[in-house]
Length: 349
Ligand code: KG4
Ligand code: ZN
Image 1: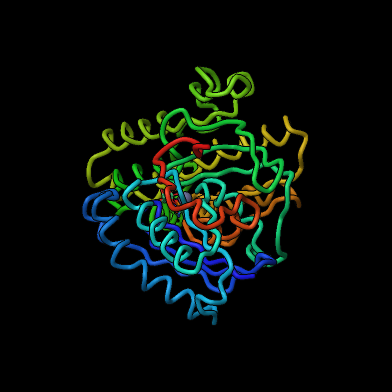
Image 2: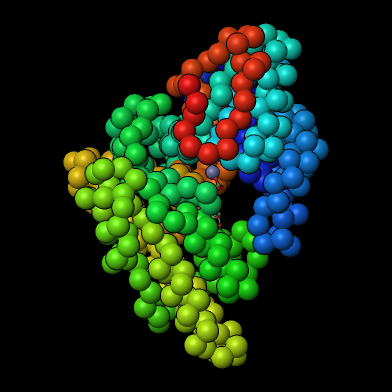
């Protein structure tokens, strides 16, 4: 069985082909570089670019996989959360491809997709293959940061989430303050490589707000599993204001390294707490921030039950959507024709 999946929730136009065992036959990502100059993704521009790219990207994925549309048994697409206009391009294309052949369609939740990247065969750094529930999963991307208890392949329970910015946003905003481009997570990591992580002290694991305050779920309040990045972001802003422009430039690598260490620390501390509270010794990660080398190094040192997908499977891609489709509901033709995309929150029933 071959699954053709599309992912267009933000600014990457992605298509992939995955077989019934979870092996990736093709995983094509076309990134739109047009948003850099605006310092963020412009939704309408993203949608227009998806429209221009989507058919080409699908054709390339089929070509690389060495299959034709007649070999495909299931079409999958991200339904949400994300930019609605962008999502609609992928979802509508998926509906059209599926309806033309009267194939079933799987509408996938993007966050479920990030978790499902861990189920792909040969998807992790050691190429050891699929990682199956139960496990704790840290999902850290540009729009979301949450800790979940994955009980079954398609079912997770939220243990904690961010009270303000997502971890990726915290990286992107810091990168902007340091004069790096958008999105800035990878550039900040690159700059941090030449810096001293102990040069500046930023609030990380001991962030007051994340320890107290209100929790989004009853337990995350008491257990300190929620995240907050407002403090560290403001601390960087103040540090930069205290320095002269020349000093700020000269110390940019130290600032980046210290900031990265604080953000990574606040993620790792909560991951450790979640493992302790759930009694699980198995951890997986997903989302663009999981491509960060420092985070990967710190998480790997937690033990042998840690599964980290390759970097290309942490950032947005369609192979993870195909992977989630293997475990989720498959709607028969024509039940999916009326499906709508959703911008935020959980998947509507
Ligand atoms: O999962 P993703 O590709 O898209 C969303 O669903 O948001 O995540 C994108 C986010 C951006 O904020 C980007 O700056 C961040 O992931 N990111 C990184 C790194 N690579 C991507 N953050 C830190 N270090 C990296 N190496
Ligand atoms: Zn994502």
